[in-house]
Length: 590
Image (tube, rainbow, N blue to C red; front, side, top):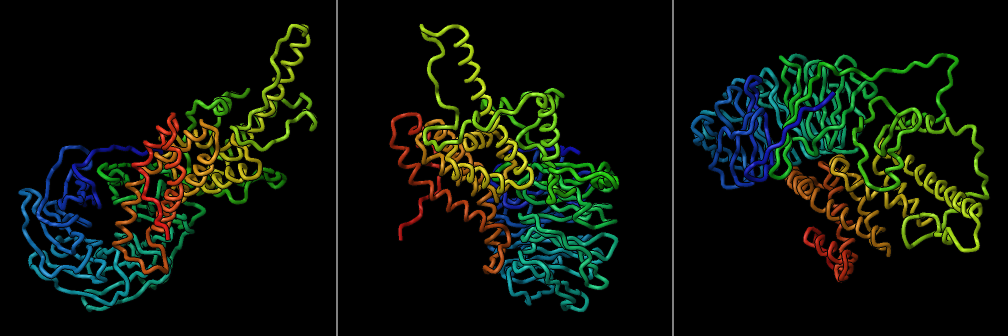
């Protein structure tokens, strides 16, 4: 299963995005910091419309079903409607919201639309009138999401405290409150045919509610990162989060049967479903870069459930924590490090493994590599080099005497060379085994893998694993796939590297630090904007903002070391001076 991905540069930083309802010629709207909406075809790069008129950044937008008009809301709470053909403002809605518009949904007739805001008010509008028809003010926290039911009788809203409210527009009152989530509600979607409502939350879980009984039909386990968007898509339910897409089977809603794919996005903007082709469409923005993706759902298969025979014992290396819905990783090694070059060598069976391979593949390769060595006697414990504390560089074996002297015979030279070869091979094998452990942990949990590397350093001051993991983190694909929750742990490793006196490791640490400070700046700015929009009161973390704040604090803690290194007059000082402009300001002294 492969994503079809295309990227394009936008004329400004985008704060929101939306896919139109048309599936024949779909459009994508991007709300920009320049207070305008830029409309493009979903397939193509030529701008269709440039809609101007607002004075503040556009924070939410929605197309009408016919793709003839667009409604947009601003950071100041203003609302306007544009005609797509003429690019002119056709309606300015008076007395909109008092603060940021966080969600807009246009009913499928195109005559009405609903808006929510951080001012905690839901408003229902008639496109022909400048003032709202209905207002609901019973929410006690900022509202983050809104959607009409397919028949237009109900409207659902989600707030920053994790509560979903269902309103009956005919009766003009609230019907029910769904209180299950501990994080802000980030996405809502009514099933087009069934009485179901799916909810995505900042607590990392997805819930499905039966609207006949108002009971929970399904509640997923947490993904540890906020859910960005949810969508019923044919016989599937889609849930997107940081670098992840989870696909649930509607016939058997379960975490056990869910399919998890690694995805090429960080923070999803919108999801749509094309029934004719059974495709899911995705759009994401990061700064001024837009990413549009397609995925065919026809080939989605539930994970095969292994049923071992009665007499078969489970593999000793099988992990109880491994589940069919574990994320599918696709990163590969591409490093010039000698250790990773060794890791890439093919064993006797021709198989190959990488740091990001799955634990199953790692176990298969380990067995294949160990099989040819079964006849060789294992080296005794006395011949194995003991791990020693080091502050001078990676844990390579100690340098021995020169290989040749005038008094040595050829057999003596060969014997010494053989001993050195055994020592080097043993050391490299030990280091490679540690990398295999890191690889398996990375597949299960990136933070656990990084904590393990730090523990190896703390226990024996071994620079080898630290040096190798920072080398791998220079790869573009690995940086793209890094989860937000892993960044703080990476910065912890960088701090260790900067405190050593081994120049290659310091340079690696500075390069990693610069990459983190620049690559994830857009992610942090977006999280800050979305957190301001939800205005969390502190009893929950609606959009992972605490993670970003933690990363910022860790980066600030690195500032003194970077400033000190910047005073050097060598390659380290040059690299440190290049890092300084990308670093956050150091923490203020109390």
